[in-house]
Length: 424
Image (tube, rainbow, N blue to C red; front, side):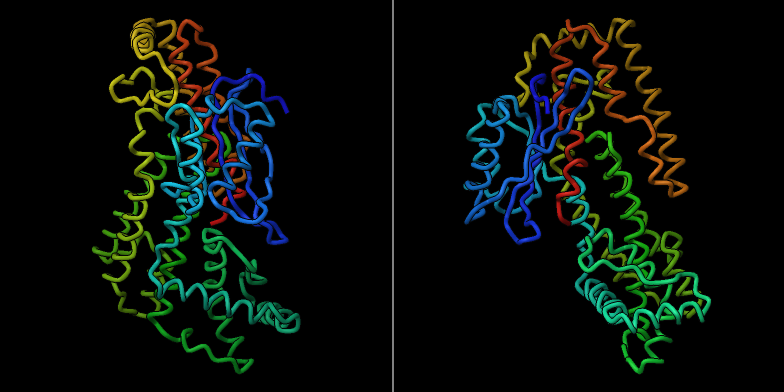
């Protein structure tokens, strides 16, 4: 592991438990190397005894010092948002802010926050999910019942050969479980009837409406999740995806006002086949509440939008809109360098080409996403590398501009890289 060549770096910290239920901290670092952005897992740090903010900070600082990473070079910290992380006085972030000699940007992992927003479903819908899991467990928990159910699906010439289930699934993963369950709803009803098992909810239209609504909404959330998780995505692009989804939630609510349900195919099909009276107000309120959760949770990113966009569109930047405090930028030199960059075609043309390259990349992403070819996205060029290569080709006489660009680029990937350890 080579962590010598870097100026500014960012870290991500997550508290979790291992298989033995031992508390531990996952510590990641991201920095700019000579060849581009690099992410490293610095360590899985066990926490003995308590898991206070002080305990986490001591473990993290010890690991950082082990790898000779200067604290004053850290510009941002992403966490999982736990209370031990964010406590105003004794939380991990509060302690780190005291230890670091300059202002730092602190964020709650974007993908983790999206998962929390997904959990804003009303309590009644959460109970729908719980019952679905319970019914699936009742089928697959016993080998005999599970085998009989799969044989039953074959006899019914069902589209699917089995249910989907993981004992402990994340919220956004449950969308696939719900979708498969809903697709097999008729077969599940018939199987339970044959076994003499009675679930009154399976014949309750209001319960079934909630099921199909959740199928459709989690499908939309999963699409957003796929877009956020692409390796090489920058934090600014992720923010744009979130803002776009917030606006989509408004459109979804209007879809219920119009009673067209064009964005809710499962619920629409149920209404058409059963002549159901859809509870428009109930579902619209659920969508608006989810939108409010998104607006609230991502406000910190909105406040930094101009700074987050700088590495992509420096020609559009206005000095007064940028936040320089975490980066030790010489603002006077920065302002002169920015004017020079904007007015010299040799350098400004590089960012015009960058925009064209990013536009081409986004077009390819959209085409693959529309075909649900999510795995193919990994073979595309990486957004952060396109941006890095452009800035790396700029003369070092623009050192203050490059410093800001590389600093912001340093914490773009952590929201994806650390996500495998952030439990939703």
